[in-house]
Image (cartoon, rainbow, N blue to C red; front, side, top):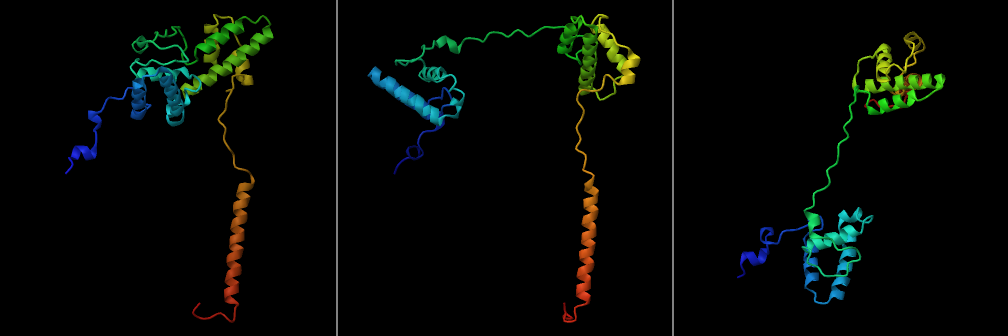
Length: 236
């Protein structure tokens, strides 16, 4: 009688660990087999065939089509860099696995009014450069609308126009000014983006009322038919 271990087969705990799990155990077994082939030309041919097989089977290679070298590098990683083939790309070095990525410098910028954002400060600097007073005023009004819109995204309270006029003067160091009375009178700082609501068409109520009238007519018509039918059975 055969033992249970021979019937069940290998346990995963008894198998070799998977180096790159996105490719699976079978790909790793094929790579190990390719390493055992004595002929280099045949090894290269088998490795190329395996790459084409991976393109069809492994979903991870959808991104690798733009960078085919990645699959060849992964082949070397699976083989523990012990693979002698004619690589169409530069053979990767083992140190790439232990190389730390370059630290990204986080932009350090002092934003005085964070609810407006850094881009508003940049737009204010561009508006200051305008020499034409009409263009500068139009740019200032647009900035006021933009600032009011950004503020409302972070705060549901109504922002008075005087606050925006004052903030514009502070951020531009007094170079962008507007008449507060004119701003309020002409509503110059109206929001750039309004919440869109889909109003019901005017005919909606009429259609509902018309539908009710039709139902009432049908009910009366059916009632009259039942009452005026002389051949109607009593048990109906």
